[in-house]
Length: 309
Image (cartoon, rainbow, N blue to C red):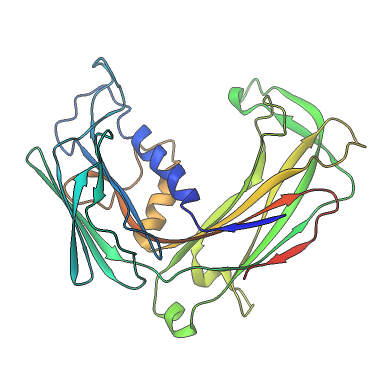
């Protein structure tokens, strides 16, 4: 079973993290209290723009963020400018008045005015990214392993028990851009494996081994003619003769610029209150990205490789 779709898989997860990590301090936020979030995806419809306001934890109500209502939002895309309005019943979420598609290689700028704050971000939309092939290597039998509970990971008390797991290696190749484009650009790519953990016990914490990586796109080539990446994830089982549980796997690729790379690399940094922002005059993130995903069912007799259209 093979399902191919293009969607903002990684981006949706990023957006939640931005909102959730913008204010973990109890100190009042007096400057840059506006948070702007939007992702322009090449080949997709004009994106919504979400506006939030940060607030300290010692205030009642929503301790993370409030909708920033009554804002003015404009998106300049090439030689066109699109007006936005607040979506009915969705405070803080602004949608384009007109419908259109985000083209590749086009300069863009988001401009926001809210409560005396003026914020802007700009960039260029990247070329589309297309998965060419995804190959999986499923071992015949599981391997013995130590499973560590990451909820209590301290130096003196690391609960662990013996278990078994299937290490699943996945290799993804994607269609390369012209050599001149790669040589003269600073595109970055984030490759990610997203197994569906639904069939597995809820107490399993360490599900992924090497589920994602981000680096400059030219470094994915190595000595090969096409870019590729190999990742690993683990599927836990109860015994040495247990079969591999059937589950879904989505392989996702996201291409973006250096602002995208900075955001992706810092969004999970425990030493930071929030990821690096590329929005001038506010917090948050506004990025141009290209996304492609390929989903398939993984089972013991799965076909090793599947190709994109």
